[in-house]
Image (tube, rainbow, N blue to C red):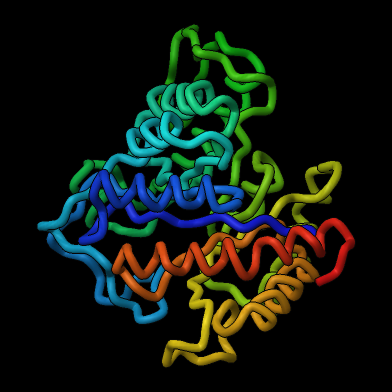
Length: 315
């Protein structure tokens, strides 16, 4: 079974402190995980929709009075306190930033992390945050396409001029220039436009909460778009999903990644069979000590057996 396991680290809301961010990231780095990914908000407006799309309860884990850390600042800090995990945005909301600034942020982080940056991107969903930033919400798709067009060129030619629907740039430099094809681009969303963006510009697809059967079904649509753009190989797929390893929970054991190690390993196998290349662990709790306990359980009970299976050694 070939599948990687990463960890989501909260950078906004009540759990977000420098100490907690570092504790979780270094635990993942030392515990054998493959990646640490963070979300992206620039500001938390007072008006937030009642239904939050990235939580099973639909409840937003933040409000206007809580801290919100810049994703690129956090990942740059983590580049200095971790050694081997990939560091990524899941996902960076492209229209929030000028495309030249965003490209510079990505290229800087790719260099500072020693080539470990995973650039997850999406058009965004929180309309009130767009209003605060004075960015037209209805243009979020076209602005995302514009950036990806520019970014693909900048990954290949670090000095260029650009004329897009929202921004025109005289010939300018995009330095520090990364190795060609870096950083890796992960595209979020489940719309037809998202799959087209993935096939046209991306290296992988990232989604929240999907079960293995949903991943398999969506992968068929992704591959159809992939073939339309004559892409070689296959895209990577990452699923972010909350976990509780152990039976000391009232969570439904029928949910993926809930239960004892044997059951969780079978869930991982189902995800791998569906085309998933990375599962990114989120948590049912906002208590960081409990999150760290979950990472320790995974490091002791699941990851070694997963590595054995990948190596063909069985259990």
